[in-house]
Image 1 (cartoon, rainbow, N blue to C red):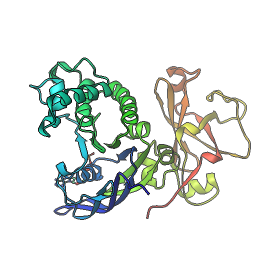
Image 2: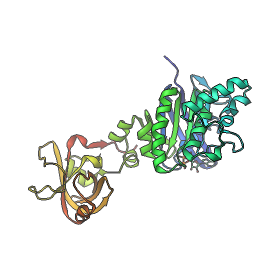
Image 3: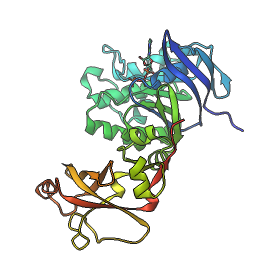
Image 4: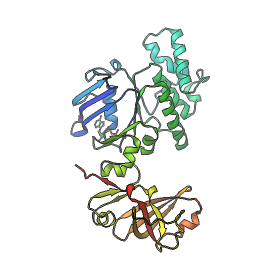
Length: 354
Ligand code: ATP
């Protein structure tokens, strides 16, 4: 069996009294786009820094391509880290920035140039080699940082919130590009982010971090559709949980359940007029129905978010596409009585926390 690109076993890290990472086991395959997702302070950066060799673990073991690297210095590991601030040399041209690492490694000038140009082409920056970083946009500087990482052909690329400094539009564009570049170069990417949408968009698999531990590892669809813990259900997507009395009433069994907002239809309370909804009403037994009052409506342009206080207790969020409705239409729905309906197969039981 081929060795994993990365294997972490019982990884721990304490800084004095603070436990940043408290027991992480993880395997990342060759060529995977793998994201570590979690709120601020959940330990993901510390795990990344331990893989890079900038921090040494308090306990545990790190393998890269089957080799134990736990005690090795950063430069002895076949990895490269891309930081959020890019750390480009302002006085060097783009090409010199990209080739710098090769120069340090005493690669001959002609080869340096060929490889730097190839790396710039990989990140779609042909023709920019003679500019200086100050003459580039934020997105272009980010690509130079990426080219500089790719030029050394590391086996693993570690990216610490690399898109964090970009504005939303550019970030969305770079998400798509980064994934395409990764697919083309075939290098294993380990990507740290606190942005769930970013992780869902780009990753082959995601590890969700919480308080120094991994709560769930899975594909974006598994994480989103089948959250393994209430924390994951809340952190990835909108927290839409039914528990206690309301779970008993709506689902017919005790426990904690999750329903994604876009799966829930908002209908008028009376059966005849379903004008809040964009399609005909459905009352088959495979649907769950619950009544409530609209506490808040948020017009999002392409969709509307309804926060509904349920008669059985608790609150659910429903998301409806604005096919016919306008902002005035939806504002008028605040305080009105509604019925929420969704297909039973979209109700997922969330396992209780350990
Ligand atoms: P962020 O998204 O904010 O970077 P994170 O999930 O990457 O958060 P870490 O940076 O790994 O979290 O930090 C985990 C915990 O360890 C935090 O409580 C942090 O304050 C602490 N920590 C990290 N580095 C150090 C350090 N060098 N000294 C002391 N405590 C640290």
